[in-house]
Image (cartoon, rainbow, N blue to C red; front, side, top):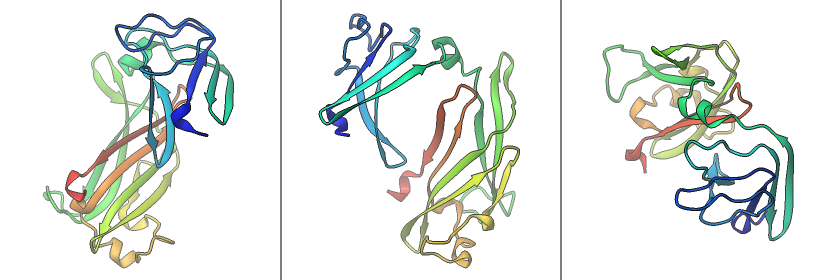
Length: 207
């Protein structure tokens, strides 16, 4: 699809960026509400909804210069659920060093994930999820993509168990990658609300 030509049409009222009036049901939505970007290298289109207002549910129509997509019976969490973060889990990622006292440029033992939900008293342990870990690491000055899947209930991935086939690097080279050579890390999963959630962090010194 020609993403840059895209508009979105909802069958419910839409409240976009502040200072602009409500968009009536059935009205194609473009600038300034529509936004474009990328997720995991794939082009994305979305809209910015006003804080405190529920996003529309029902049918979503995406119109492009070269076609149209329609999604029926879409159910969206209300604004309160999204803003408090109380209805979905968050992965807390810990890069575990082989030396527990190391704080920079550490040899790595594992990637550990603790799942938590925001409760009234702070973060509390939550049920775990199947998740995807994506990494970009610097090996001998060359950036290499790595990825691995975690099953629900799996809270740790040994560093040396990260697959390296078709990456151009050897398992022996992976063992020498240090924490400071991780350029990008993300964890993606499908939330309790049925949305794909991606949390990521980038190391600016790599770029």
